[in-house]
Image 1: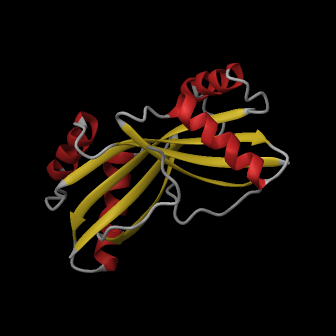
Image 2: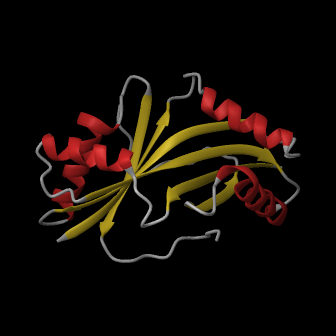
Image 3: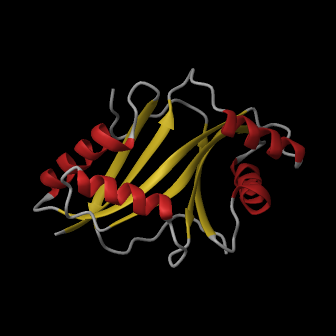
Length: 93
Length: 93
């Protein structure tokens, strides 16, 4: 059975985020003066196969711990769903 | 009123994604042999102020169009919510 995992990886609070600070400065320069913080992270969308939902969940947990996130500096959270086309809330272009 | 926007930016399908391919290779090398695709994108978490939900939504739409995503190569989608602590599905560490 095919699964789709959306893994989000973000820097822990307290870890300096120069990319986020740069984006925040850019948004303020464009007139969005109330932006006070931007935190930049990663979104990884993974397609894989697993026998059932429990096996899929266990596989993603193992992927995150062993490769996708550094637990000292980053935190990660994820959603796993069966791989069917799903609408997304909003989209540009 | 304070708002928190989670903006996701991903490469459009058909655009080569070397970072995602490298991660997919790493996962397979770790034994996750059924991984057939990884797409790498960005997650930007933005804290800002706006008068109401409609103004917050309009502000994020403007930020995405003018700075956060390149509509030729990327697609973006987002959720805006009032800035209160919210639980996330799963988390390591």
